[in-house]
Amino acid sequence: MSIVLVHIDGEPVEPWIAEFTRQAPEIEARPLDRIEDPAAVDVVVAWKLPQGLYGTFPNLRLIQSMAAGVDHVLADTSRPAQVPIARVVDPWMARAMSHHVILQILRWHRQLDLFEADRAENRWRCGVTFHPETVRVGVLGLGHLGQAVARALQGLGFAAAGWSRSPKALEGLETFHGTEGLAALAERSTALVCLLPLTTETEGILNAGLFAHLPEGSFLVNVARGGHLVEDDLFAALDSGRLSAAALDVMAAEPLPSDHPAWRDPRIFLTPHIASEINLATATTVFVDNIRRLRRGEALTGLVDPARGY
Image: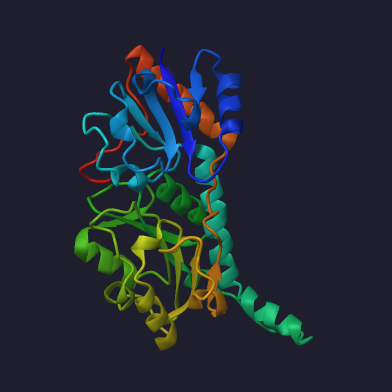
């Protein structure tokens, strides 16, 4: 028997099991507590499987991440090196991420925090004008999600450009790469969006050195991982005026501790890691397709290069 193990840290998986059954009755999907024989598991579909478990499945053939990021998989040293890892590539998630980033940039650009404060004082502020041509967005990370976000911003008339570690040519989108390209992108960006995978090379990339290249009063959006941001450098940049505000959907510690200063800072727009929540039906379709491909011996989608971390 070939079994697909489905696991989500801290959440029930029964709805996912039911969706697997609905979409693909031939696929035997089970939660962790119903795995009697680890040798029967050939696929793991998971978000944060407990550390040390990947190495207990001797016939494992595929690790399918339930997220675009795979740092939670790569962190498990028991993971068999020869087993391929796939991230989820779902158009639904890309659209949701685009909506969230657009929401945050428009909120900042249209100064909604100012008008929300005015409302508390019954103040009717007129004569405020907005100039969209001054909004130049730099997107860090040009994978599936990064490209979708950049294109969506362009569709709204904002000047968008992107950065990746290695050169990437994308029609109609200005791109930068490498260390010098990172500084150059920052210098032309009044809003900076992080959609990078979390790797040893990108950890702490949102730091004082990068912020120094941004125009005065810029805006930061982090929807990738909390590990990308040096939090002390963020507060220093806000205090100096280098950054006027930041929208943070991810933090180094989640849930965010109640005494964290970000809770009380009006310059920080906080959301609880919900920028691009996984969709039950559409994501399961992606997982089912990859499992069927695996069992037919066909090429998989969303394959990750563990050496690069994405």
